[in-house]
Image 1 (cartoon, rainbow, N blue to C red):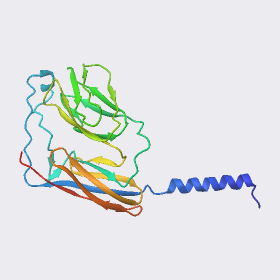
Image 2: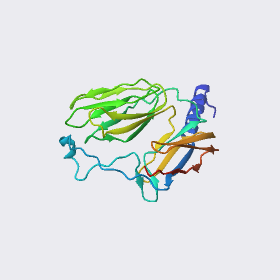
Image 3: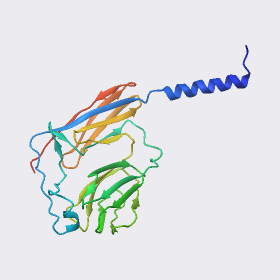
Image 4: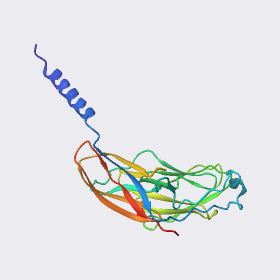
Length: 237
């Protein structure tokens, strides 16, 4: 039986599509971030000047510039591909959200891509004035009374940006603006995962707000999982 040219072309296209769909997503880098030494102890935050927030906590909220877990793990470490991967041609269409609840920034460290939409929300019954202290990007600060719509912003350059509230001085967080889609923030167990890496040699950078940065090289050959762990030296202050 002979097939027509159009039928043959259709079958070829379907076969190619099936091959593309079945193609592996690439390699993965997984790891854990830990510390040696003695880290500074978190301090309780006094919210007495803002009763509407203070009453939301049965025990005082603690500072988050160093957050540790069992086994000397570190949370809120940004791990990303800093070299080896091409810059992204476009930003994700989905916005990231930075919320103000209980006079506290959630998450403490928010990582997102250059030119990706950032939405800042206020879940409190009090006003805030969010002030990201950008040095490379445009610096701004905006008041946000309760019940108002989210503040929408974008950053066009990679930068780690400290964030404060001009009304509540204990509120502190970070924006990690990166130019790659390959990034993660270590969780409460100090773990991170970077999936879907094409074959190649990469520089992996880990950033912590108090302990600085570390880098290491990793090579992905195919559909494999590589391990990359980081160990920071803690400071008692």
